[in-house]
Length: 212
Length: 185
Image 1 (cartoon, chains in turn green, orange):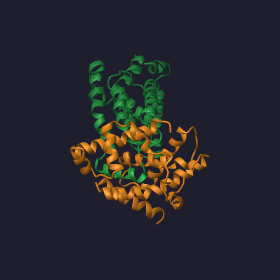
Image 2 (cartoon, chains in turn yellow, cyan):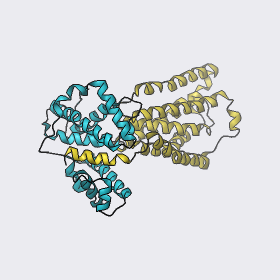
Image 3 (cartoon, chains in turn purple, cyan):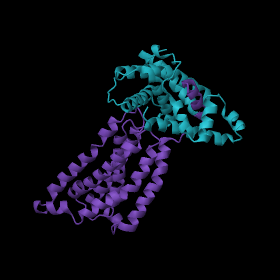
Image 4 (tube, one colour):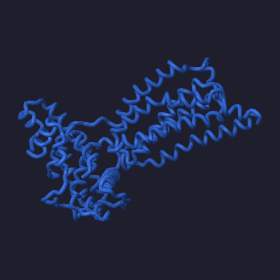
C-alpha cells in the first residue's frame, strides 16, 4: 500500500472522533471507584464518629495526605499520556507528599514520649493495612489503566506506575477512614509499603498494556 | 516555511481535522509525510541500517498520529507532540529490528529537504498486514485506501450503512497499527 493510499484511508476515518482522554479517564473512574467503595462498605466500613474525628489532627492529616497524593498523581498521569507534554514539574510536585509526611513524623516524635514510638509505628493491625489498601486500589487501578490505553505514554511503565500511585492513594484515602491507627509513624511505614505495592503492579501491567 | 510558522500551520490543519474537516486533515498528513520520511531515513541510517524500509516507519508513524490524535491538546504546541510520536515509533521500529538506540532530538525543519519522494518500490509497508484483517475490514480498507472510494461509495458498493463502513474502517486501521506493533518485520 502506498503511503498516499494510507493517508486517504486515515483522512476518511477523520470523522470518527476518538473520545477525549479526560472523558475516558473520568468515565472509567466511575465503575472503578464504585467497586472500591462497595468493597470498603462490605469488608471494612467507616470508623465510629467519623465526622467528629476530622477535628483530630492525626486523623485529618492521614486522610488529607492520601487525597493530596491522589490529586497530584492524577495530574501526573494525565501529562504522562500526552506525547511531548511537560511532566517533570508534575512529577517533582509529588515530593510535597513525603515532605509533609516527614514534617508530620517530626511533630509526632516531639509530642510522643520515646517509649511509645515503636508502639505507634507498629500500630494495632499493620497486616490488615497491607492487605486492604491494595484490595481497595485494585479496581481503580484496572479502570485507570484501561482508560489510559486511549493515550500515548512515551514510557508505558512510568505511566503505569503513576496510575498505580493514584490507585494506591485512592485505596489509602478510603482505608484511612477505617483504620484506627492515626500516627504518622504508622502511615509512613505501612501505607507507604502498601501504596508501593500497588505502584509496582501498575508499572508491571502498564509496561505491557500501555504500549502503542 | 520553517520552524515555528510551519508548526503553526500544522496545528491549524489539525484543529480543522479535529472539527471534522477531512480535506484539511489529509493535507496535514501529506505535509507531514516528507518530514517523517526524512526523519525515518536519518534514524535508520544513524543506527547503521538500510533505509529501504523507511516507508514502513513512516506509515506506522502516520497510523500512530491518526489513532492517538486525541493525545494532542489543541492549545499545546504541535511540534513537540509530533516529535515525541515520531521518536517513539522510530525507537519502536529499531527495537523490533534488534537494536537499542538513543536518538538525537532533531529539529524537523532542518531535515525537510531530503524526504520528499516516496520510493517506487516498497520493500515493506502496511499493505502486507492487510491479509491479517478480518475480511469485512480488509475489504473496506482496500476500497477506501487503494480504490479511492469515499465512505458513501463503499457503503453503496457493499450495501452497508455509512455507519457500518466507518466502524469497519476504524477497526481495520486500529488492527493494522496493532499488527505493526506485534509482528516482526
